[in-house]
Picture 1: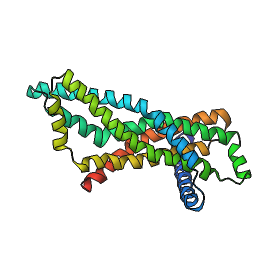
Picture 2: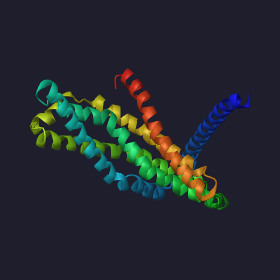
Picture 3: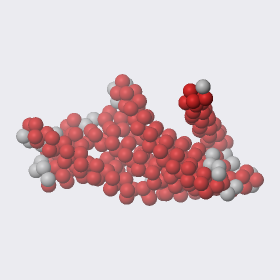
Length: 264
């Protein structure tokens, strides 16, 4: 009987842990909105975090998107060439893939692995070294001083990074289409401008805000709830990155279904 009960105990324990994490994130979000309107906004902290999250991530985001666009163009061009004998609509395929899906998803995955891990490690280190308790002692709320500026940085910077990612990706596709596949540059640009609409751009842009809010929430919560010393900081950082990547992919499906249903 003990062997039979163990799987059920594991499932129950895991479900309890997940519900506890969701409840903790919800409580933190409620505190963020409470302090956002009832206290002075930490502009200096917010600008510093925006630089750390946005500007410092621009290089890796641009490089990732550039080569993603190049791979998309190469694969699409070769496949279409084998079927139709001419690499047509390469620009359309690259632009739609990046702007609607890959741009927001890859940007959030890269930023969560770089800046999200750093945010979790910073706050987690403060938690295990009792610096957060010291903030309470000094009369400063940690949510207002630590969490809200970082949430601001994620929500403001990720959409901007996604725009840069789209540009770099389309540029990478252009280079491959023109110099490797022999597609005229004018045709590549015309394929994009002829079929791409505002709704296609908004489809990916709306996703980015939701992804950014989710990444900021998970990373800040994992950091502020860290326990167990240096080992706990490592576990929280790993858990934050893994959770955000999985959540980005899961949310992407449901957001795509919802936005498509509303014609976006």
